[in-house]
Image: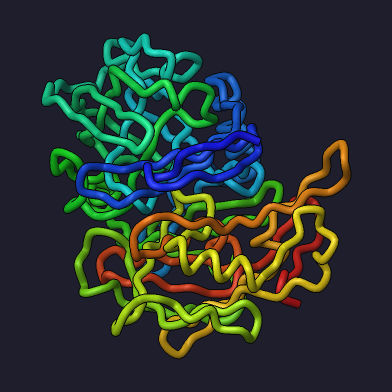
Length: 402
């Protein structure tokens, strides 16, 4: 295990193959991201694209969604249930990059061919000279992180995700990148939050894509609990990935920056942990770029004590659900999702995918989103949840809730 700093305010114990960093834009709250020590090469990205075509994802540039609007699915790679990333294309001809699709930030950036930092080594790097659709912007950009920073310049080029392209899209070409990014499985980050929190007030790729493609301003995540099958749906949602109906919750104060909602309860099974949110409801950011369910140190300590997960997995079968109450709705997270099991020299190991941090807000990261299909209604400023459907590639699908 390695001790690592999270958001600059606490320490955490994680497997050495899963290092957590904090994505902290100057105007943003922390969004910890797990970085397993592997990566997708450009050759693998090309193979990945070929596999998409063979699977029917890219048989046409886009698919007709509800009401005839543009809609498409982008498969996501799942690494150890702690990181989900996909492939985007920039320029003409296309240059491939693996990115985190992050609802906790709003900028798109990829490494520059001019970057010689350790953090850029071994990554796919954007070369503007090779793109016939490149336009110079030249404005400098700086984004601060809890463990470092990136600096670079803004470029304009065509950016495509799952066959949905935004022309004249402004993004950042990272010329310097913190050493902490060395060995990460992804090249860059594509932020899906609102423009209001974008560094340099850059228009987001999603806003450009919606305007140019007649696409509904909605996207949704299905994060599979183990193995392949995770999907980001753009321009709507896909009913084959959830059961029941979607329950929507309006964003906190209708701010239009983060996907922040309020919630009014949390429990370990039937035992409420007594949240310390003062006289108002607690607040949580629904964030695909955060590996774990995270919250204030005091509350998380109480929750973990009540859950009482043994590191040797000896009480695994008797563990209760984590239960979150949002308005009149309850959302269960079963042990199969909030406990990360692994095998080692001394038998099984159980690690809880719930961690404490400083501050008063919560982050409903991948731990929550694996249990609940998450719909982000960008225009209506709301998020919706429905029970996720467990899907196994090559096997019969069944509900994980059955």
